[in-house]
Image 1 (tube, rainbow, N blue to C red):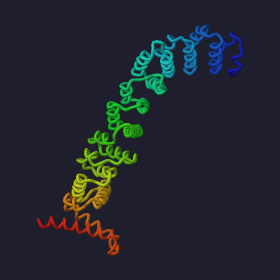
Image 2 (cartoon, rainbow, N blue to C red):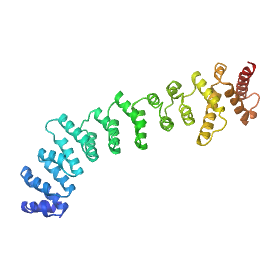
Image 3 (tube, rainbow, N blue to C red):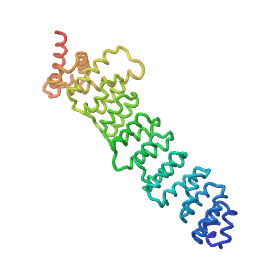
Image 4 (cartoon, helix red, strand yellow):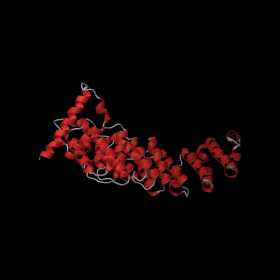
Length: 356
């Protein structure tokens, strides 16, 4: 029978269906009796809840029982039902019907979230995200490090919905960026940090992280369209790994200043001293050199040439010699004139080392 048929039955037939009907009929009869009798149906419904074997039907019974005001029965189910899904539903309705106020609901929810299984925590996070359960920031941060992945995901979603990010929240997000093993959740932590915090602060927080983690964060910063000044990238300046060097240049804002020129030149010079590099670092180091030399070419002026190492200046000259475009410029071409001036500046700088 469907709902219309069950609702049209008399009270005795509806009572009989509570125990003898198929699962759908048992649910419909539960609702029908509640609508017909109100709180007078609680006795039958409570008895049926104790006898009902299917968790799904017990959940439906709980919804009706909670609606009729039997909060003690709902709380008992939240604490003692053998099925996690039933306990989760019961916990939700304890929160929704708590007569002692919001603080009591939060206290109850946190106790269950800490002591019960993940399914119960997930259900109570749903209550929090709906606005019915105002969990304190400290509790949400606590669950951000939970062993259960979905709990951590729900905690992060709760943080994302908060109107402002405190220093405590930002510190916790940075810690998850460093420690989160799930790549998708870690990406979400980085994205949220960049939305509510400072990219420069995140760079400072990851300065001692693994090369893979540093590169992941810098790549996310670059994809977010954020360019950082040298002073903001400086916490990574001592890292020698080629992938970090490439990452730094990828989001370094231009034009670069004297400190950045000096650092880039020194790193290029150090890379030129490496005779042979095996594996993936070879292509990374080559990428770094090419990118670094291109940045230096645009930044070197008579005022900054003294910041350039000899070997770096020689590499810049070699790059210019390899650029076939220089031979195609006419003598009166302004770009050609600038190129010749740059070449002369670099050549004099290299010669000054030889004269010493």
